Length: 398
Image (cartoon, rainbow, N blue to C red; front, side, top):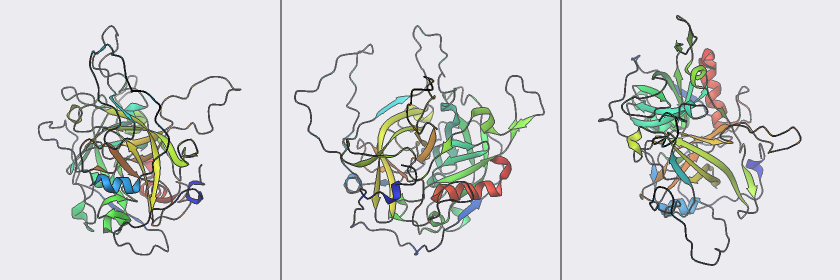
């Protein structure tokens, strides 16, 4: 589907929505950068931590934007047996009726296992994501280059402020955070330069309503080099955080999306969402959601949506395609053509109604504001332009 999604004849736009006023984009928009005052990284004050406000829309608007697969339910009454926890869990589809699974990543009760409580959150690929606290509130972020974080723009900027007063004045990244008492397994890293896309800065982005369900709710944050305290490393060696915890690739223009006749000719993608939602473990633990995402359009708007039980605090967390370890079978066995694990969106918005359990993300790729298919070799559309300007200004971090 790479490069084909935007021209797929089977994708219909949904008319009738009201959009924020947006200047006609004949050429590509740019980016805006801001560097907060330097400050030392410190442990979170859990008593004061509050999730950053997540842009939210009504379930009615979600239904207008969404696409539904058709099919008859099987006959008979659904049922389930008990498990070792001797408890019943609610059906994992919320009132939006979109299935998902959401579970804590860390092992909190090993039982007969000898695994320490923080496994597997401290292992790659989980540890490339982490808790991200800004002066605006608690969010989530992930590494996409040795010294570059990716998150949501609303975590670091108040939409449409159109001047530097809208930027967060402090940011701190806690990769693989797993406990309020012990904190992040790899310490904390103070953020430097913040970069967002200029339509989000100016308040002219394509959105369903001001600052909500937008094309370009994405941002990067620079992390500088730190002392390398890994086993075997000797001082005064320094390295970038991504060289310690790893980083993800990022995809664009429908990387790993597919038009599925089985799901009613809907364009879908399997997504693993990582986040630190406030409703789960008070943002102290990483949560994982797995769901089938679907591509939605409305006029010039391009988004992806999933079912998820995650709540504010998960904003900015990565939506990953092909998540996990590549299996090793044999050279003659083909398991698919797209095996690179990649971020294809970050959590951007949810519902105004608790229990609706549907989230959305800006689509990574070409859109009205960023129409180019290649920004300096860094990719297409909004994500390509954002990373190009980030890396051009900070080449050592990339």
